[in-house]
Amino acid sequence: MNTTNGNNNIKSKDLYHEKLISAIGVLILLTAIALSIFQIWQGISSTISATYFRPIHLCWVLVLIFLRYPLVYHPSNRLYLLGRIFDIALCAITVFAGYRLCTFDYNDINYLFYGLQLPDMIAGGVLILLLMEGCRRTVGWVMVLIAVLFLAYSAFGHLLPQGFAIKSNSLQELIQFQIFSSNGVFGSALGIAATTVFIFVLFGAFLEVTGAGKFFIDLAFSIAGKYRGGPAKAAVLASAGLGSISGSAIANTVTTGSITIPMMKKLGYKPEQAAGIEAAASTGGQIMPPIMGAGAFVMAQFTGVPYSTIMLASIAPAILYFFCTLLYVHLMACKLDLQAVNRTEAVIKVMKDGAHFLIPLILITTLLMLAYSPLLVGVAGCAAILVTASLRKSSRIGLRKFFRGMKNGALMALPISAACGAAGIIVGVVGQTGVGLQFTQFVMDFSGDYMLVALALISLVALVLGMGLPVTAAYIVLAVMAVPMLGNYGLPLLSAHMIVFWLSQTSNVTPPIALAAFAGAGVANANPMKSSIEAFKLAGGLFIIPIMMAYTDLVNPSAGLIDFVLSIGQTLFIIIAIAISIEGYLLQRLSIIERVLSALTIPLLLLNPFNLDFLGMVILLGLIISQYKKAAQLKKRQA
Image 1 (cartoon, rainbow, N blue to C red):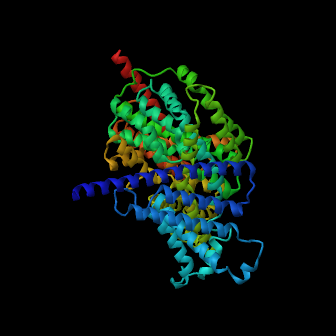
Image 2 (spheres, rainbow, N blue to C red; image 1 turned 90 degrees about the horizontal axis):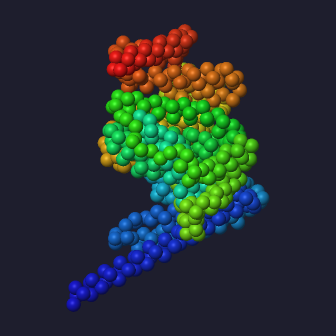
Image 3 (tube, one colour; image 1 turned 45 degrees about the horizontal axis):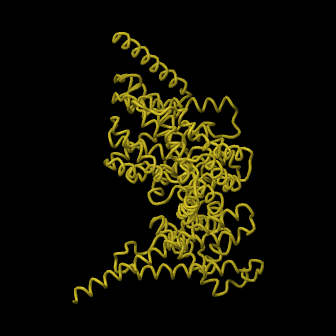
């Protein structure tokens, strides 16, 4: 009898948990859809000023985070119910803090003279704590610790030794600066995340639910599958097209990798190679126009340069990056003697079934080139993908899929907004304390005024930041610290930001914490560390191209056409020299002498000592011609 009662109690408890989970699921759905509707409405009308819109957006995001990412994750845990009560309490406190911020009178300047009222102080302090908790749940501890470290520096900087000490700020000054101004949490980083980035993430969600993602993968396979190492090359092309849709290199690695990695392994690539190829290609999707990663929109806000200009400046470097990745893929296929896939769908058939999906991308590219507001372009893109999807029965979506797209878009944006809010704290402290100038002076002193050494130090900082921060947050933190220093070396503002933007991508593919490579290793059932080494090699362009941005006119908007073309040529030669030196293969295996010669061309082309870069080009061309002749002779003998 007691056993029966015990079983009934367990079943009753399980049923209660199921009902609770179901109710919260519906609440998440409705809150997410409402947020997407609100964002679209604000994007079209711009009714609410940034002063009030940004707090509303952040508080809405935090409420969703506390619902979507519970304190106690598993319902089987006996503390689950208590954790859910705590989550709902955090939602209520967030609403209170948001209400205080939305009713705050910024026109009454008394608070500047006499300080904040106690309720506003409490609301501001609580919101910082809520943001830290939201960041911890979505992004991880590292972002929280960095933000807390900067806040502690602002509050207790006077206790540090001379050279690092600053005039510290009181709790009143800190909250006033970080919350009740546009310099901290609600600065430009959150501003761009709450507007343009959110809308483009929503656009990506609509592309997914309409089946556009599958079309791009099929198109990549139909183009590249018939060549040697086809699936790997298709993975590179598909990731170039889809990289910015997911907004995450890791998500893109898992999405496209689930299709491409098994095919690469079946063709003959080692599991680690397949994982590395997918990770390197997916990382490159964040730097590929027209829709680049969220950091590119933040860059437009920071620099005041139109997004269309950034997009144009990014075309050549992005193509060079994917050329670098494709070159490694091809050389691997040649060394392993891999053949093409036996059957690939015809390009014409794939285009016939899904060509209408290209219309929104063409529309977005055209509008961005015509210098329309990226926010309105994103809204137009969302409308265009829904309209064009309805042109074909196979891609037409009903209300269920439409609302799923609205929900997914809002949920995908949560980590970005939380990270940008926390990054705003760091940006605010840098501006409030002047620590950025100290960092600039330290790096310049340590590098001995050699820009290459300074770039190496920035790369190291970017790698460390990227181990715990999303790419966008890493870029924001690095930009406020490193861009002024690069400006001291005479680099144009856009070039400096582009260098930092590219270097902030490196953590996805660089051991020991190569997040995208680890994700690929999971799909490929491969060794994570070996996969990250392969990804690091394949993504070498992430390190080479920023150096060329610094030393050539690769992204200099004021450069002439001849200088620009020469910069592309020099970068191309360096990529080829590094690839064949590492792989020991071009048209056939290199001899030891050829490999040494190809390695010697790298410093000649990269560092240009005594203006000998031309000699490096001549040596490399000689190697290519020699390889071509040997390959032709071998083909004759075999015939």
